[in-house]
Image (cartoon, rainbow, N blue to C red; front, side):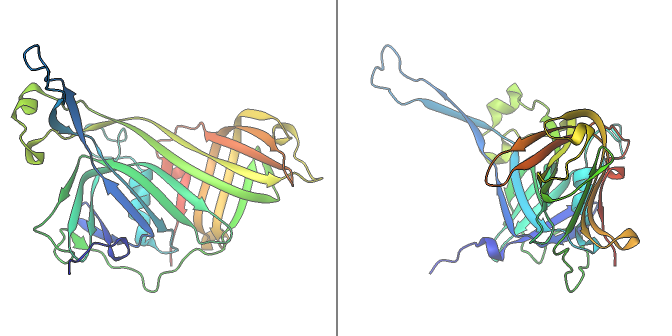
Length: 314
């Protein structure tokens, strides 16, 4: 009877700077496709050649997505840093993002995503569930590593906290335009890293490609822009805000502070945003009326980690 690969048995490892971090994920998906160009082969003398020929010599960027819990301890700080912080080395220091290798290991096989970069991160904030994150990204190449097993992956494996300490039933506080918002229903935070892969098609490589081993793969990328945005939804009650947070208003520049987590002061563990944003607010009609604020960061800090933070600790 054949053996199969199951998602629930998969292990996800991130290798960065020679160190390997084993992730605890609730879901993982990854793939890479090859670009296929068709051309007609029908000619004046071959009228029955109705099926196109095909040329395959180039791979599209690989894609991946994974979800994991935001813990009180530092186990997953590295993945947050890869999403938020700039690469501070090389000629493009503080103008690009760090890359890493991502390994997905099952009981049977190992798959490697080379030179991976995170293109978006969603901070999932729900009152009834522990805080968690979903990240997605791209990589230059997806490979099946038949020479590796989950016990022979490269990099020095880092220790994990035991038992895992989740940030359960997070408390959410929002201040917008220097006014505290009450009766909050939901909050979202998302960071997008807009990257563009450098052209990687050449005549020589295109004509010499014979299979996946020597096909053309992406090699380098440029970080074009970043967007930190989100929304805050609350009930419309008899206690309404004034000025720009009054119903059906907007602001092109206002301070915003969001905290989602457990504890206060030095004991706080969770996500926070503290910067300046533009926002619009709108009324939502239904069985209970709501007010939604859609915000977007307008600051340009040297370090985004000074505005968007993930606080961990013992």
